[in-house]
Amino acid sequence: MGSGGLELPPGDEGHEGNSTDTPPGTVSLARPMETTSIGPELDWDADAWREVRTRAQRAGRAYIWLNLVEQRMRAVVAAVLRPVYEPVHGDDWVVAAAGPAGQEWVQRAVAVREVSRRKGYLLDPADDNTLSFLTLPQLRELMVQHWPCFQPYVDDRRDVELALDELEVTRNVVSRNRALSEAVLNQAERASARLLETLGTGGDVPSALRLPVDAVEDLVGDRYADVVAVHSDRVRLMRQFPAEDIFGGARRIDAVGIGLNLLVQNFSGRRLVRLADAGCRVRLLFLNPASSAVKRRERELGMKRGELSRAVEMNILHMRRVRSRLRDPGAFEIQVYDETPRFTAYLVDGDGPDGVAVVQSYLRRSRGMEAPVLVLRNGSRMVKPGERDEAIDSGLFPTYREEFELAWTDSRPVS
Image (cartoon, rainbow, N blue to C red; front, side, top):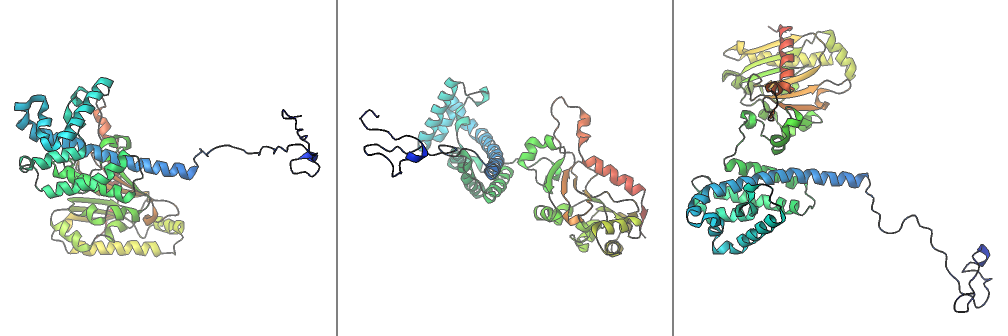
């Protein structure tokens, strides 16, 4: 009996709320729904985690570039404007430089600085100044307002402003943790590199002219020895690093492999002739097309008998024709080896600190075009304080250079 004098129906199956046998005067109570969960679904599936990691990776790369640009802009503004305003205004030189037009945003930066100081957010005393709290657009405004002061040091104001315009989209997205597309990230990286070069911070690595130093490589390159890029196959390598960028302007090329298609088929003979006549020394080491190793490789790849050996022989003949057109054929050496091929390597300027190498291992069922590619930079590994000097030689570049020299010693020349 309920509190209102109404009788509740029994809970057995014969007396459910929709039953026609319910006695008169009773109130029917619906049974609770059987649910496995209540409320929103909070779990992320594999696709959601993959998407959020991709977003974080892109935002991380963009943040590194933006951080470098902002620090460089801050240093340039301080170097140019501080000597002008500090003698008169002291520590308030930034406020004076902003002038009436920038009074609102510079006062906001002063207020943020005071709040950060009270709450203990200033971890480095060097950041306890108003300049450290200006944003990238505000630093740009200071530069534009005082352009005659910056003009002797910066060639083109338009280049600086265009690069900063391109970065503003990325800065807005990263600061709010929104999705950053790969196209916008690539644009931001190009704009940042261009701006840093304009402001006089070009890479001090000599090989940066051939393979630009990436911001992430510059900061965390010690984690990856001297590997600066990894590509899943040679097609993707050529999209990012064309043959002209690899071999153009080289003073020395050492290559070992089976047919050396990356050089022979993607870099013209005329360019090789001009390089050699300009002083470039070339050493090419092919697999002997008549060796048993070629036959084994043909069987691994499922090729017709003699197909690979003919391709290698054609490449050798092509390089012999190039050599015959040189004023100094001795600067262009061609040799063959009979051992089992283990890798292909192109060492460009490998005898100096600015060398670049492209390396591929031979896989049993994959042709050279399909094998993963490593790009190495010689002498670029950062050595942290306390590390021994011999840590510099712990990269992969010296290993492949030594392997090439050993293979070259055991090979024989092609007449």
